[in-house]
Image (cartoon, rainbow, N blue to C red; front, side):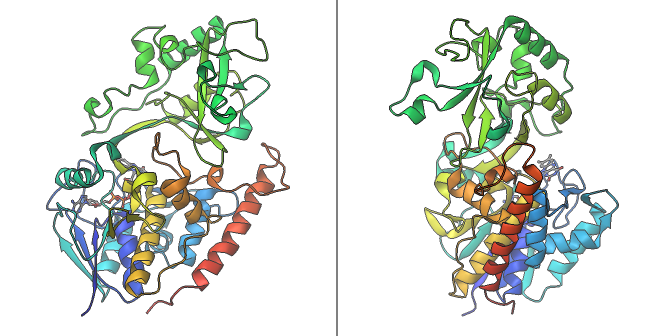
Length: 450
Ligand SMILES: Cc1cc2nc3c(=O)[nH]c(=O)nc-3n(C[C@H](O)[C@H](O)[C@H](O)COP(=O)(O)OP(=O)(O)OC[C@H]3O[C@@H](n4cnc5c(N)ncnc54)[C@H](O)[C@@H]3O)c2cc1C
């Protein structure tokens, strides 16, 4: 009997997954709820609709981790990337597209594929058997969200993100900052030094609060309401509630002694916590924010020790349905409790069109190979796809898991290369060269398209 792969959600990830599986000879049914059921952000019934910006970000595959993902997807015959290139608009080093032409072309390619049937309907349950990929995105419908929560437990599916900025560890000035957990808590030295602390004097704190209050903020989109972030306030909102609020909240200076100046008590302390197993990334604890990106960089660089910080990602708060993937998914993106179901795209805790499409590409290939009884080897960790999937299914801290963009902080460091800003160009080129070689080998070992 012919087996069918069901893919739920015809956005970036679902469209790419369908294309990859269908090209391997698998019969695919792509279930998309639009235009029958709408979301607050989508405007059309097209597949692969871009809900906001028309850019796939940097196309530099030698010096940029997103550009490297582009390159890897193109090598794998990616639908989203190939269609983006075909509908490209001039945008300097970025890959920007004519959004309507782009989604119309994605829709036409999928509808006309002999192995794909598109079914316009909402799926509201997690099925008990068959082969399924759920790629329902940040705006997964309410009834399906409820069904996922019933399976995973309420605390493992979030309906909004609250992203604190993430800093590259090697860009923090440790002659100003120091490692220590409050009251030296923890059994091991590693736990007792789990946080990086940045001290502030009273004038520095006052100037920081003034800058926070004056900074440009983004508005919530229509349909995103404050109820999604109750209990997880942006720092600027905390500052608006009173100039001392942050000093009694995430910036409290208690239980810490600055080894660079042990006699002076800091007036406030900003703490950063390790964000990945590699120890290359740290997030600024409690600093979720709705400040505009430009404002974030200048305000956060006022923090002593972060004057030269490089940010792997900036903060944000959005309506966003996503799983606690490090605890729920295995390395092949299968739900551990129901392995006939995979998840893909933004719902797995990646962020952005490119990252979501990349996770769709992997899920489509993995499901197809499993159905062809030729399971895929795990994706090499030193590729951009591998760094990302490894992060969401294992490398990230499960307790504080928040959506992630691809960035070089997720890559395993290479020995013998110069650190810091000065060595960045050579380091990034070495990462991208290594990734390209691994990706090429991984693709070469797979089944050829039917
Ligand atoms: C308001 C907003 C603005 C954004 N702006 C940007 C941006 O500028 N740049 C960027 O890179 N990323 C942006 N994002 C993130 C972006 O949405 C994702 O990166 C990307 O679209 C995710 O791809 P996906 O395939 O996982 O989800 P989507 O592209 O959202 O696709 C999911 C699909 O599943 C369908 N679906 C949902 N539930 C069901 C169901 N029960 N049954 C059947 N179908 C269902 C939806 O209709 C949708 O078509 C934004 C997100 C939001 C919400």
